[in-house]
Picture: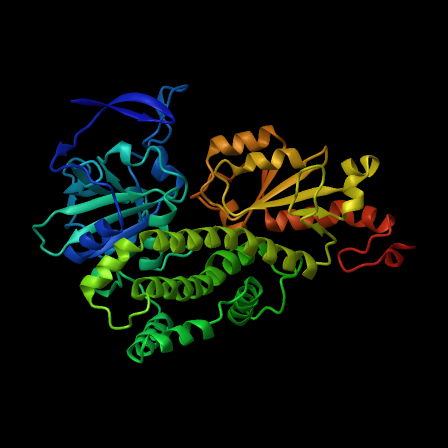
Length: 484
């Protein structure tokens, strides 16, 4: 039996050993919740480059990009007996394996997979073979692989992939399993998972709302009016305080911190976002309650359902407002933390200035140097920021004006095709240190991709003397310090 594997990487006729079992289903939060509730444990692995490329056909070479034949799994899987006991191969005793039928709900097929340990190659050589290539060939970098182990030893294993490009589902999975940017692989006991994560502080806030409603709608209105949402500055400052407590650092000086990009990521995408989400849930959750109860604090369930339907337009506006505010927050937070880092390092810059219709996030060292046609090419540069790229990097091209342009991001999911396009436009991509060195990204061995550590070091070595000679204080020095 053959099937065509079609993806953005090309097509190739390959044998498909899967057998139809059920109707395919879209993988969602509900899918993961249902599978976890039925399972004993679940393996979650962030897919490295080779874990994806075994499924991609290289038209030019006429070979698969990798000979790995399936995702590589850590020794922990074998040592903790996640799969059935391994049996020795009589012909090759160093090969030990277990046959497992694995169901893939996204395509509705069961595959006769094999977990094999090539013991002669070391403890780490554990592979899961005979899998659907279609579930791996188009995944974005740093996507996730989940395998659910059944409670009944005679039950069926279930596997799925979560594409890193699916931001909503990745966010849910990351919250349920506590996945951070430095995550690699782990087995989770399903009985210990909180499949509907909630924050204790948020639960307390809900109880306060319920208590106010019990006292009448006027008391609830007074409660909502007294609530003040945190400003962007308050959220940013709170995240910075948490980071300082966790790390023992006093500031974000990029020349003192070993990995400034990782610090920027941790503050922006993890600490600050958690604070923002809590505040977001309070703010918009309260608006939803107000829309549903609409003057009656004793509304019953039937009337609550009717209110949801009748007031759908108002509820939609609340959700839309929340979505737009979240998108705006991400970019604004990133800019705030980078500005804090530049200031801590004594790096001169102009922020959000308008130049001939374009508005770069940061111009270094200042606007006047950037606007000077004689000085710009050798002494100015652009640092623009995008938390995630998608196609928005194209907006950056117009900002160059014949001076170096650096695109700072916190995105670990950028594809090779996009990196090629950035390089073609002479745009340097700046990424957190852990992503530059990661096996999960496409950034290694790319000269056009540098870490924030390298960016700041090169910035100082290339520009300090020239900026000082132009009378611009920088990097903790003044022009007088440069006089010999």
